[in-house]
Length: 244
Length: 302
Image 1 (cartoon, one colour):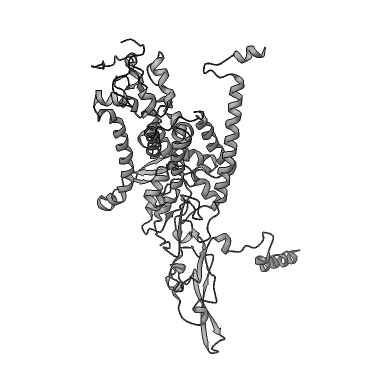
Image 2 (cartoon, rainbow over the protein chains, first blue to last red; image 1 turned 90 degrees about the vertical axis):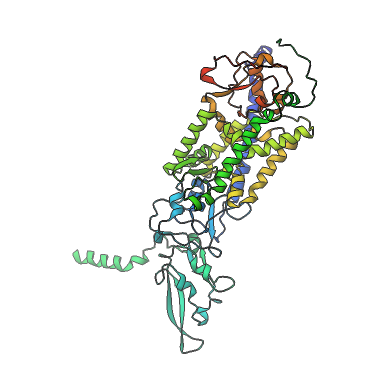
């Protein structure tokens, strides 16, 4: 019977056994290739902490699902801030990013990069650039910051587009001289957009203030932590008790 | 004209008969038209920023993954769009619309017209193939042609399981544009790899066996009415020049030796090189809808 089966050939001259063998081979090859490709993609999808996504970018994982790497945001950027990542660069290849220390985001009011994005990897719900969360500036090196040395550098504070909101100068007694004040640049992580103008402007050779991804820069209280509402809850309890 | 094997023409070597018969230019006509088309589309992208500062209108913005024509019409790569959709992300309407426009465009013109008339990788693989011919490199083991459909399936499957548009990390199609328009040149290693693969390891390996973009465009082009047809198949003198130059040579035999003269296989890239190199004027572009039209007779057979 087997000879009869083997002689049964389809129009293309392939019998069932050959078909199954080829399919199995090709599937195995694709499986291996798939794992290789996934490994490459996963390995290189770790974003360099100093690479900042354009305004309105979805969370990094969602961003990588959505971005088609077309460069329309790069073409739309009037300040040549945005770049498309290259291979071997610490940013997934072909995706848009900027480096604040070289060219920061100028926070255009009409947000042309977001409008240009066809894939929605830059969220079109972002209409007010001051709501952008590209990252959060952190005064990361207090030892070398001139203001922490008692000088009035103030450059990061002066260049901040949200001056006195995203960066404030907090006055403190200067222990070193004994009778001077120190004005410490302090970032308010709720309002900071991560545009990077402070990092760009820092007068030191290596910036003392840097924009970092929000998930690195900002802490988060645990969901069960009711500390913030202590006063309210106490009042509530008291009120309830009084009512009873 | 009998269909039996005729004596080979006195001129030896690839396409010499066609050059002698048609003249050098006509024997390279579609090659030049295609190169012009490829370079022009690239130039539109590359020169647009300068034209925009001068005329105020962007002709083409973006790259082959997604772009904007005249700042209004969205265009996007159907493969990239499918990948994005399969990750579960719902893109802006313009991306889907752009993919639909492109799909429609190639459904009319012929799917793999993209491969031979637009795709920059074609220049790289054609160069490898030309060098192979010039250096007389031996025909090597051939991969199955349908491997590209497996690869296409893989490319569309990976976004579902990983949530990433995995293929876009290595997709060679947008690489040249990205390198030239956005200075991202380090991705060119992918093209170097493809060049070496095509030149030394397996003939026409990338465009003819593997590329999932080509596979998808081939599927889109199945409905296209425009095909190459062996209208004068009876004049074929078996010189094999079309087989030498054709990037998908399996499509030729059914047209030349079968009953149906039209190349209906969606693998055909409609590059027109078979028309170029045929001294017997066997091939022509034809509309599938009026294929019964009597083709103008070639005026001179040898």
